[in-house]
Structure formats: structure tokens, C-alpha cells
Amino acid sequence: EKDGHDWFMRKEIFEQPSAVANSLLGRRNASGRLQLDEVRLSDEELRDIDKVIVIACGTSFYAGMVAKYAIEHWCRIPVEVELASEFRYRDPILTRETLVVAISQSGETADTLQAIRHARTQRSKVLAICNSNGSTIPRESDAVIYTHAGPEIGVASTKGFLTQLVACYLLGLYLAQVKGTRYNDEIALVMDQLEQMPAHIETVLGQSERVYELAREFVGTPSVLFLGRHAGYPVALEGALKLKELAYIHAEGFAAGELKHGPIALVDDGLPIWCVVPPRGRDQLHEKMISGIQEVRARGARTICLAEEGDTAIEPYADELIRLPKVPVLLQPLVSAVPLQLFACELATLMGHDVDMPRNLAKSVTVE
Ligand code: F6R
Image (tube, rainbow, N blue to C red; front, top):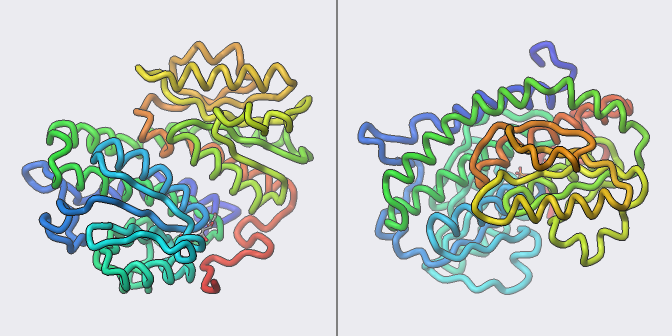
């Protein structure tokens, strides 16, 4: 049942190329336009949307953070991302033109469910991004995008997360198509890039031995930090969450630009820091990330960099270097999250923990 793997989690990590491929299946019609059959909202209704609020918990919340970068960029509508458990209690401003997007792998998370119930009483439209067919959250939503990852058994979300990212990209591109904020050619190009992701994820999985080696080196470390920028920031948060929940060690993710505002005080000799390096581009992201990495390295950190193929500028600052396929920055989480999942899984295994059933955690959190 675990396909020769020791844990469901490891099996599910290695299933990600096919999970992502399934998630993308049948999303384009014969003329190449995006079609999301399960989105039962008319083009009229979608055109009227003037604000998106994404609500979710845990790993699904990090997928929502990536969605904000993508949807704002492609659709030019403001996107807020909020923890479901906070959303209801702050008297959020919701109208009929607000699209509330609830992201939940299980479809049963109580906080997320209560949040969408609240949104519906305010007459906002609710779209669920969900992996579990027929679960409560999609049943209580106006529309749904199923992620089609197949059942996720390990408590820590892996293929659930990657396919949530895919669903968020699809939603962003679909809204852009309906609202006409992007040309069809451009949407088709991103779809082509998404369709290459299963192969890219496979390439990253091909380096698992290298990541396991690093896990062996870091057994016994009391703390690990993760740095990212832009779409790499939620990935840093996700890497830290995985390590906390599986290895029970202190782990924190930061936006690299925030370091100087406090967290850099944590950096000490030998502290391992994973750095999710953005692709080189016209923006300044890559350069800014490198300067952040220089800062922590100057203070004794041991940097483990995830950087795209061909990025030689990073080499002098990377104590360890894992290569990622060259992909656009918005899509990079689909490849950069994978080594962090492998690292947490392996480190927890080496520490003798039950990776599929971490202490104090349940697969679906049905209490508020
Ligand atoms: C982390 C993890 C949790 C869930 C969170 C939301 O690995 O699995 O943080 O992401 O409990 O669960 P869903 O997506 O089922 O609502």
C-alpha cells in the first residue's frame, strides 16, 4: 500500500508528478481555452468580482499566500489571505462582489467551514479548492475546484499542497481569461509551463539522496531557519511548518527582507538556513535575496540554497546547493517545496519519529 516506501508521506511526495499532472488534466478545451467545469459561477458573476479573500489553515494557508501573488499579478484584483480562525472574528468587509476562496485538502476543517458559513451569510460567493470529493466544505460552497491529488494519508500535507497551488494558478488564469486582464496567448503560455511541471518535479525528486545526506548531517540541530522572498516566502513558511510538525524542532520561516528587522539576531555559528532563491529576472528579487544570504552567512549561518540551474551568482554564498529547474518565479513553489518536504521527512525518520502520525496532530481538524 505504501508502494515500497516506509511512510505514506514519502510515497505521497514521490507521487507529486502524477498528482500535479492529474490536477491539470482536462482543464483546456479543444480551442485551448481554460475551462473549469466545476466552477458553477457564470462569466457575468466572475467579471463582477472586485475582491478575493482566501481563507485556509496551515499548509493550505501557504498555498493561499502564493495565490495572492499570482491572482493579483494576472487579474489586477486585490487579494487578501487570511487564517480561517482569524477571519470570522474581525468583522471582515464582504459584499456580493467578493469571492471568498476556501482552500482545504480534507474539506472538513472546522475553522475553514465556519469561515465560509460566515461569508455566505454576507452573500459573498464562495469557491472551494478541495481534494476530498463530496466533503463538507465543497458541499457548502457555490463553486469548487477539485485538486484531484488522490487520497492523502500522511498527516503532513505534501501532494495536497502542490495540487492546491495548481488549483490556485488555474483559478487565477481563469479569472484573467474571463475578465480579459491577460491575452489568451499569455494564459496558454502559462498553461504550457504548468504542464511541464510534473517533469520538473521529477527532476527535483531525482536529487532526493542529496537531500537525505543533508538530513543526516543536521540530525541534532536545535533549530533551522528558512528564508524566501515573493512566492518563495510561503515556501519558507511551509518548510518550517513541515520540520516543526514532523521533527519537533524549532523552525521558522522568514521573508528575507525582514531579517534586518529582528530575526537576524537569531543567527549564530552553524545555524542551518534554507534559502529559497528566486529565479534571476528583471526584478531585483534575486539580487536582494543574495544580499540577505550574505548577511546571515557573515554571522556564521550555514546556508543551504535552492537555486535554479545556471545560477552561478549564488555559488559563493551557498554552503550547500540544491539545483531547481528553471521556471518562472510564480510557479517556482511547485519545485522549491519538494526538497523541504524530503528534508523534513528524512530528518524526522532519522530521529525515530512516526512521520505519518506526528504527535498531537490529526489529519482533519474538525474542532474549532
Ligand atoms: C500541515 C498540515 C496542516 C493542514 C491544515 C489544513 O502539513 O497538513 O497544516 O494543512 O490543518 O487542513 P485542510 O487543508 O484539510 O483544511
